[in-house]
Image 1 (cartoon, rainbow, N blue to C red):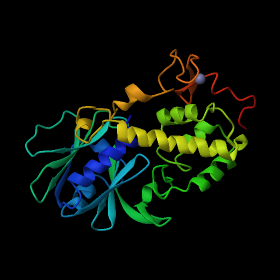
Image 2 (image 1 turned 45 degrees about the horizontal axis):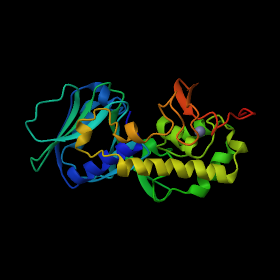
Image 3 (image 1 turned 90 degrees about the vertical axis):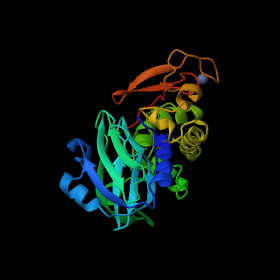
Image 4 (image 1 turned 120 degrees about the horizontal axis):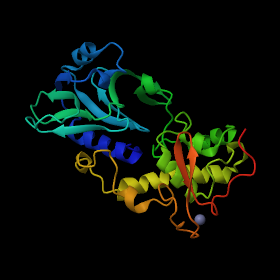
Length: 288
Ligand SMILES: [Zn+2]
């Protein structure tokens, strides 16, 4: 599943390859890919023809293209979605779901999605907190890598919650873009067990866990070795970073890089949480 750094890599690639170009035609090859566009495929393709793409933007794991008419084409990659820029005439990918052709007759934009959990839709841009965002994701908070991310506000909101710290990190209305992997990494770095009650965190602890989340994502973006082009190869958007640099996630039974204790895996919301039982002791009191 693509995490924020992969999505940011895709955004930067789109900015470079499709911003400033005029769409001549859009083609939907699988209805599931535009199921979030309620008016349907005909409306979707009809509205895109002739529109210029102004910019590629992102909030959390949501990507969108600003269109010249004040709308946006929103893309969510889901589990396996890819946005590819392919030279005309390149054979169709097996799981090609949508295609966009441009007035300059240059490379096409293609949406490929094996498992079709991702999708595309058109949405109106609305201003939230001084930034235009698609209305359908207006409730999604800024992510910790956003230059306008308000860390002090996020700390206050986090500590006002009555839940477990990992649940709060995954709550996209509080802070967006932190997925399961980065949550575990941030908790390991800040020495907090995932089940720690948020209302009992100190300001310093809340600040630390949000700060380290931003830190691990920034490192993944820089050191990940993922470029827009290699994403074509790394089908699931998994960067090499994940193999090399994770301290907690996926390391059950391996020694903690800080203290040598075996990392353990616990069930969490139909997924897993990885932590060091020594560096990240279980809380004595559960979250309310
Ligand atoms: Zn440890």
